[in-house]
Length: 312
Image (cartoon, rainbow, N blue to C red; front, side):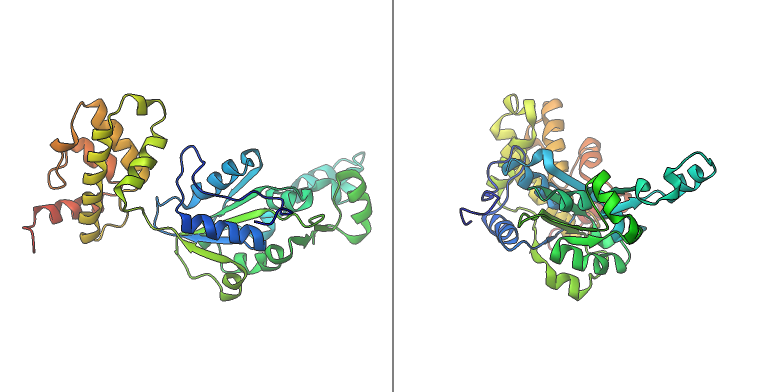
């Protein structure tokens, strides 16, 4: 990263609870250097959302992490500003209320709009963008390309007064060259528009299959428990967990157990004073099943697959 760049280099190894691969760290740094949003895809539980927290933590921007979860009703302007038309209508019923004569008292910047207006280093997470209508990513195109936008609900004649009293006018843009680090996640529930994809850098997070990496992730997420839980239990649980995931993949589970389930499972094994050697993927206890599986149909499919003879 050039010395004049406002952000430090992200290594992916300095976070308290997250481990990023060298490839992921490289792509994050490319997105930061190019000023492009980073689109992150991958199966549930592979760390898409937590990547943004990891970037903010390592770059010492944890207090400047702005996270927004997208809904099916979300519109792009919801991330930029809010016009409280209802409150204005209520205030207009009072003839003594002078605020209702104007629009600007009822407009406030939302997280992404505020980040752009401030122009200071920060991390913006737009989580599960694929849940929104197709117009949502399209409407964000120009904003994420230029990091500026117009407040369409604010009359032009009120722009100067709004700027004087609130610090922003009808047109909002980032001062200087500092752009927020924007990380966007998708669960692939629907195809995103090609023009939007062209504006982003892309990476796919795969669930880690290296036992050593998984064991490291577990240790980082055990908090105080890590002092009391043996390496043998953690490493043995990781080995059997990977076998459970593979069997679950063969059974075509809708949601494979991921890192959060693994961490909880290690805690359960420790609390129940069980050894990893006592666990077999074919004969999971009720407690194991409750921790590892979240859907009834997944549990039934796993049981059917476990009952089959090897090689069938």
